[in-house]
Amino acid sequence: MQIDNNLIEALKDSESIVFFTGAGISSESGIATFRGKDGIWNKLRPEELANFNAFMRNPEMVWEWYNHRKKIIHKAQPNAAHRTIAEMQNHFKDVTVITQNIDNLHRRAGSNKIYELHGNIERNFCINCKKFYNEELDFSDGVPKCECGGLIRPDVVWFGEFLPEDQFLGGERAAMKSDVFFVVGTSAVVYPAAGLVYVAKQSGATVVEINIEETPLSSIAQYSYFGKAGEILPTILEEYKSIINT
Ligand code: APR
Image (cartoon, helix red, strand yellow):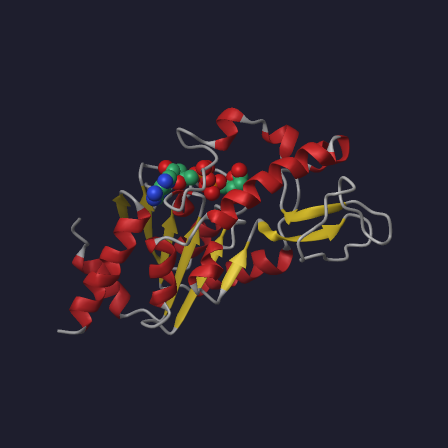
């Protein structure tokens, strides 16, 4: 795949790089996306699994599903796309990840500046007193309860819930400051997360889309590369390195 020279030039003049990622970046690690061909939401109903009322109606079923996802995530490894983003930290002053993913793979790949817009499956908290429980939970007596008696839930953002303010505002600041804003593996249909791309665009960032197919963002991105993130991101970094080392 040919990488546009102007993009490499834009990277050469950049200090602040942002990667806005979605489920597509983890698909090459064996984690299903939500809306793609084999997407989770084609088989399961988000209103029965990913919202607070569903949890209160049937916490066992919701936990069964999150424990199933946790098993898949624990078996998964960060792929070349996650690793390339982490390696970018060696080449640019300020590299930020803004992710919609709850799978912790960016952190496991070595990225250290991460805003998690939709939470993280490795964390849990009490719905009553908000106490956090990040150790492995015990399900031997059914759905785990807090010492206050409240149900413990995964620290993920469900449909109809607000995003964690500190994470969203942090992402927004990074978007405003970004020189190059990569949009990787997201269908960009879920808001307010997808709105950050427009914040970056309006702040003058060069927007680069990487996806296996076109999305609503393809029209606003200066550069769109259609293919697998695990192949395209390493190519962009290699191309950049070859240019700056000549
Ligand atoms: N490389 C690049 N893009 C890919 C790859 C890949 N290997 N595989 C799939 N994609 C693209 C798909 O074409 C699709 O556009 O990734 C995107 C995944 O989109 P979704 O499944 O809609 O996931 P995402 O955009 O992250 O969903 C946003 O919706 O369900 C909620 O909370 C959930 O965070 C999630 C949010």
